[in-house]
Length: 454
Image (cartoon, rainbow, N blue to C red; front, side, top):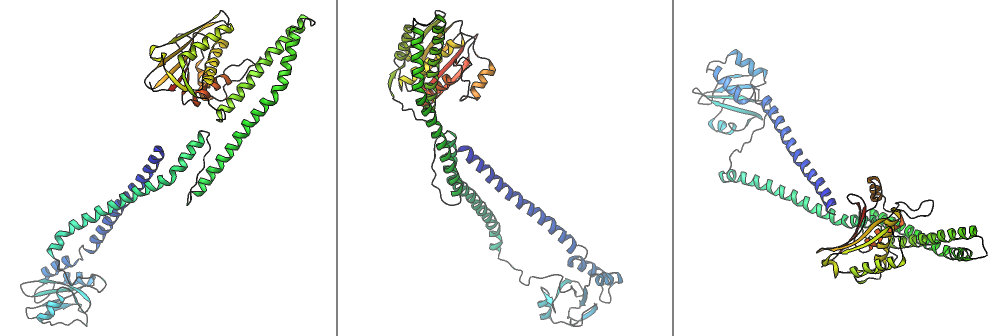
């Protein structure tokens, strides 16, 4: 779930970064556009520039021709008033604009308009210069006073609004992330559970109900397939048991019959041995199926593993093995009295599979050592041999294909197939881990690691 949360966080952070970049680009575009407006509308024809140019070229008697042409080109009219409000001269004055003004009139238009024309004034020693622009050129704020306290509080207000916006943005991000994770967490957990081969059942309403329904449907299909596979294997194992027992019985009778020729008895013995192998394969296949689909009940009890290993080695030696094989056991003092809650029968089966696997892979003999060590958190059971070991390619194949390693050869000899798979399933059923490695200078080691509190 942590990786999914990181995934959501990454894209939400990307979304926030995109918003910030977009705001920055908007500010840049606004600045460039505003600069263009200022350059065009407040250049040579701006009120300030035109007032300065006209005032420089004006006298009470006349205005220079260059200044008149500049005013006409920009559709600006002008009037020059003396201190009494009387007109010295005018340029392109509209008909509805008066030429004489009282002091009250001057006070009114100095900050605004004359007959809807925005006007701008310039005070000179001889009087007042007034320029009028077209009605659709400028707008003027007739009330241009502001409270000093308001201006002083303006930066604080702007910073406060920006801080509030950032807080709202972060809150939206945080709660959106929480809501997304809360709504999707059951689905992600269900998918992980489904990947482990376990059934799931989701009960989700809303926008994600369709996805939940699909996950439930996939779980149901996989569960039915697993049950069908397990039932089929169990059925085949049951059906083959009776005819196989008859074959083994008749083969045994023929092999022991003195009436049969030596050749017939030898062939019957081969049939009997191969029938035993078929029986063992069927049993292994059935056990693997039950362990894999959790149909094998575990009869757990507190087991002293050192005692279990010694009993196994004693039973193996009593059954008689070739002199080319030496079986040893090594138990560290800290593991001597270690007790593990486990199914003793399955643990013994796993150990036997590993020992038999070492012997079958080394037909010319080898030494096999069973070791048991304990740490604060684990019990480590290892089966080591000094035989030929495994190639790097074979080890990689066993790691990548644990469920389809190798089954049997043309003589029905079990190689790296169901034997190791049973070991793996037994260890998994006990919440442990299984490792298979080569040892220096030669040989192979199978390690079973079980959780343990010393």
